[in-house]
Length: 418
Image 1 (cartoon, rainbow, N blue to C red):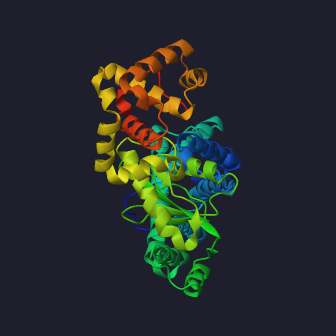
Image 2 (cartoon, rainbow, N blue to C red):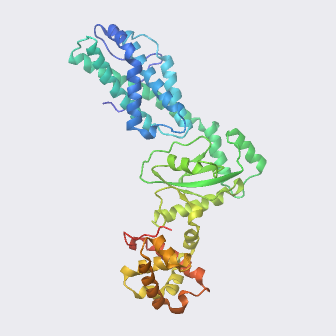
Image 3 (cartoon, helix red, strand yellow):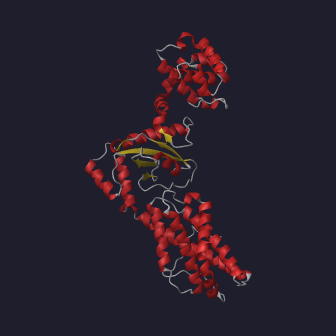
């Protein structure tokens, strides 16, 4: 199968199939009624094998995919029937597809994969229906049709790539270029004059919201596909440290939508702030993302920075925190490592539950008698300081930090859920 990323010389007004065999026009005419069914099957196959290709937030995209596939197969049959038919319209159509992908900041990897899948379905079904309709083609003729389909798709792919490249080259004068400039201005300190900002936002077709949140991003693996994003998000995927700007981040359904769009990426969502404080939101988000990279925060889902603020703040002065840990938790370090994590976890939850053994047992999914036994051990280790109210915040912070830094030592069956 040909590589669709390879550049193919493209005629100006029509596509050349290179097919020459008897009855090609009759076969094309007989197959024309099957085009909608073949296109629908190809679209379903693409949806199944490339779920990331679709935009769940925009159902029109799936409809456009089906129509585009039908258009491509239909024009292929037109060319089989009449090699001199003009291809100008379909070339313009696919060129616009490439430009549209560029304007939304997406690469053509998904399109190339989708076109391969569609071509495979077209070859299977066109040759199958031709046989059913009584056209007993030789193996050489079937191979020629298959080669013509892939050559045809290559030429369409070349047009898509041209449209994509041209749109990228023109980005400085387009909405995308204006949005990149707007993002640069929003992250500038101090933020420019509000009137200047509003004018750039107007040219970027991005109404300035009342509040925003920055999202720091990192690929989970090299070469991850760029996420398909709603148009109201301001994208900084082109930056060395990718980020997004989310308008009105506390709106209904926004968190769930972000999680859906950012699959395959590690993300940290900064605090909700006024537009002028966007850089601060991004700073906190990037700090949270760094801690996630170290394994100190779980990034299986987008990290909501404000839910992890204690550990983020404490880790800014890690050396000081470790000194406090050594001083306040010294009694814990006298017990065996296998006991240490369990006792630290029990003490932290006990502080949060006012040393109510029943409530602690519920939080840790333990029997209350087990909790009481551990509390007696902790009493022997810490003495009168265990229940002292002075310094309790410091003890709580030291426990939280130590448990986070030593999460790999957690017993597999007993992890704190509260």
